[in-house]
Image (cartoon, one colour):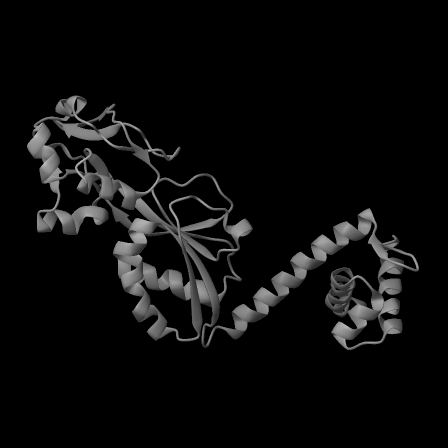
Length: 298
């Protein structure tokens, strides 16, 4: 292989340092080189590419349009190289900061109780956990993996199914004492049915009767974007809600909430996925975390 091809990553590193520090001399100090060596790298780059990458004056450096394009690509390639080397080095002992985005309710009930064993198993990993029911952009927020519940939108990210959950209609004993217990789905039309304001959520509630599933449009005076908040509203006696069973299983068992219309429950499945970027170069810290969740949640 020609030597100039081997040196291209080093040239990219030099060029990125020049842009970051704003001068040849500052880049030289950062990299432990001489300013003349930095100048030779840039001259070699521009000669090989046949374009001017930097506009140089006595006071400042400025990127040409070609320089801006080269800089963006160089940063991406250098990140890929770092990630590849880190992934290989981590195979024996996964380590580093693992940034995870997950929903509040699922984390409180399911994810957080699993964390102690995970960190005991992989002590070299530092977990950076962000809890929000708002859908984030993994790339923009620099998250390694996101735990998502429900239907997925089209995305270039990789999705791995971890588990499934059904949904249950619930109300508090206090609400039912005041308003009565619905005996059939149509009775909900006379009740305050609390809803979610996620755009991806089907606003109608699903039921099954005589081996056929149907949807019923219900209504209420509150909509929220958080499963945890929804359960709190139900506890406060403000209405009836249809939520993931994992949210309310303990409350139902303890009598704090009442499951309603179970004879009509279609037990439709809500999938729980891990979303992440990357494939063959997936960092070990991300891979072992997803494998661990799949092992525990299946």
